[in-house]
Image (cartoon, rainbow, N blue to C red; front, side, top):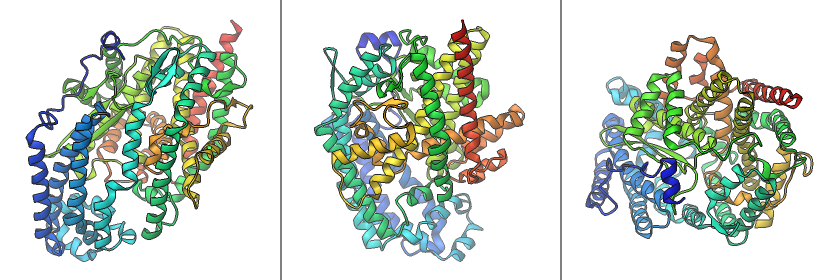
Length: 609
């Protein structure tokens, strides 16, 4: 993005203020904190190893301080790296710190989780009656103790910790660096990934979108597809070995346990998407194809703007912030105030600049002194989708702040299945504010555009993510290394399972290598959490009608404040919802179906004019 474009969008000066960490990458305090971290870790082992039967409370308290210091150092460097993925100076410092942390964990800290997991329960019970630290952190302690069947001997865990950064994780880091350098020749220019995807999501002409996808797919092939394939093979191979040694019964077992979700509930989610979700997706894209006058759609048309969408009219960043603040405020003044504070404290980095990490993310963390903060990265280009992305990421932000204040460093991060709740809820609140505005203006065309845009987002967060999950399930089940053509074949097979055979709803042209640019595959089975979160939140959002506004707001804020201290089943019980019941998923799909039926009716009326 040029400086002039950033200035026109109002993003030019919307950059992070990272002074709550350090003065800069050369700040000597970084090295001082690294030395302090190692010294605290050494002292931790001396003070508490073999002594948790009587000193657990003090050990947990000290562990929190070590965690917060390590978070301060590593988070700062990763945030700086996200602003320039090509900086050798920053990459060198990140490697230095990761080596230190791997060594420190391996030498001094590995014993803690092992000893805590194997500690006889009577010693925890006795100490919890005298220690507020233990009683408060009991959910975290129980989570650690649940890992007992999967832990190895201390010498092995120590060695694995020291070697971690030199395994598949190093391939993933190299992938990220190569990813940001990718350029796709298109219309006489060389576009980065964000720019080529922007064309696919905004270009009005189907032929232009098709040329953009062809350039994108071709650019992902060759060297980058081989790199991505090797990265996945390394990740899958290590996980297969790890799962066998740690006695996890299947590849998704570890993730399901982390998410506090029974295997049956996760299986029910995938089955619901493969059946009901696939049907809704094909119905939605058939409607979109009719609106575009393209049958069957090309894969390049999947995220195409509809002809009545004003994709050429950009929304400035200040306008976007005001829209989101207004939407959040209409539901909860508490949430609006948290967002306003994040804006004021410069916790958002908005412009698309050279070598900046692609996409968007939010990083919630707790700094020394038990101070929760959240940093949001965007690549804001002024579309309605960018406004929804802003609302989504700031939802993660308010979730992180509320949970950090209530739970502290050890229980701030909600399980992935719940981590999307506030972000999707924030999106829905913003969407419904925009929708209400269209109704008040008596503008059915704008209302239809909003509905179709939101449905498109839902298709991406539910249907597409479960499609990704099916891809992961196949590659993790492979008994051998996969070649790039085999990845391509699996990619097409799982896509047709959900979206239909080639030629029914879509033509899968220039499509083969698109698996190669999905970095979430480097974090196995992370992706189903998006679908879980979307459907959970749709059910939760619909549940508002059964409560008084203030009552629901209080219950919802309490849910966010819980962090990882409770699982989905316990947190949703007050709302009358149960995610372990297969019927639960029907509630989420009912909300999607209702929106789709509304879009079909609006379009039918429009056609009659």
